[in-house]
Length: 246
Length: 347
Image 1: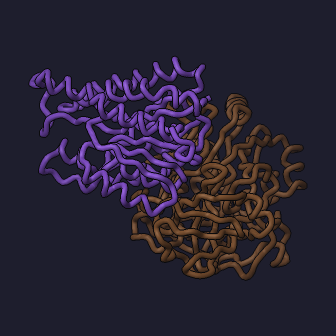
Image 2: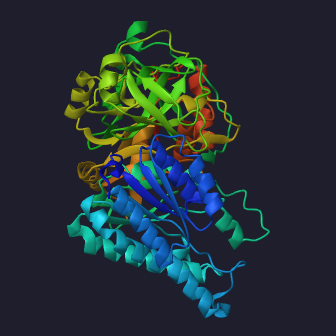
Image 3: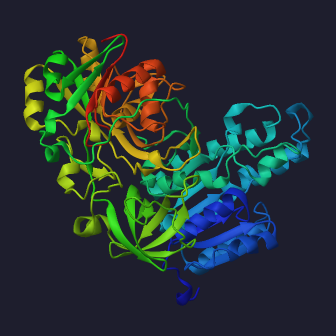
């Protein structure tokens, strides 16, 4: 670790940052003055997404790779250690499962395993690996959930079950990490016009869904709340109101 | 963040271009239209002392108006930024404008550097769905800049600049509104004392109102922009409302901001203390259950305020009242006359 690499700016790590909600988050955090560590599976689309940001003042490091793979997680941890700081971890990368969405009664076990590896295990193990840095900075973990976690919508059983599990991981971690000063929230971003949403409805017109930018006011609000108050709560980014829990 | 509104035609009267004090009328001397289910009656504002009953509760907004309009400078030249809503000490939603009658959007670059009231700011992002508004990150203290250089936000219809005092209400206590919660403007301490002596109670909430310029902006017909605003309904207000109801008193909101705060604090279990941001849009499709009466001003056609009023008394009653007010020469806008709407069950 060289001292000139130590970050003066706050540092955020965003997984699934090449498109959709992840790239919107990265743009917003860059504007807010964060240095960024960005991850996604596709190197080209990740670099394209990062290129839009480098016109800003902060540093940007891209780490391509499947976030459920230990090698990717170690590479992310290596950058965090080198920069010596982590304030925000956005576990945003998600696996939808087969398209079109199979009914739960027809779901193949290996597909379900893949969904749970990416949507539940990866956020948890990444948080574990980055915990020392998060503790040092009294950092915040944001896990991206879904209304499918509570909906019981036909076809959304695999993805929804994984997000329900992630919600419980978030809540439990929030309680367990409270005394260490690390906060954990779960956010349902709501329906958005994204590649993932299109895969869930192949061939259908999803243009009535708002673009992921619609969630910006929520992120602006959440990131300016006292994390000790919001920790352990689940928010809906497109709700009519966002309340500060008592 | 556009929400479809049920556009319905209403009459429009003349606008007040200056405060009543500048028209030879006392602050609490404005006219008051009282709309009951079956009739409209003309009064003056101090008649509230007789119109309200002992045990009635007036819920008021304690938000104070900021001198939120600041001179700004960027590569594109000199302009103004009207600060709308603080999200945190260094993050605001603001509206860059060329001037009171010349709205944006301005041709600013994605991450433009803007000097706002002498404070270096960065444009973080446009506001989704509302091109006139932007997120601004401030590397400095905008509150302080406002105290030094800020002016109250005004639009083309105002005759000239008026001091911040003209935009404060008798209940102003918590600074945070970009624009005056104007329904309570006619209240003076003298009138508040008379109402208290007559057995009328007061309870405070806070909702910091953002810029209203969008209300008369060039948005597609049938749509209105709604954006989140900070609010707090404290335990004291919830308890005061419960006491008023249990003694048979009426709960009367002073201003549409109060209605939005109360409805935002109401869930399936009823009213409870709440604090956060709300963008709840009240309309005939989302009727209002938390109040028995609403004291307000006269609002622009197609505005979110008007949709809220229609959500309270229904479109036909609102059309009848506005027809009456326009014919009788009541004055529109924040310096204009007042309107008390009473619900069917308690009038």
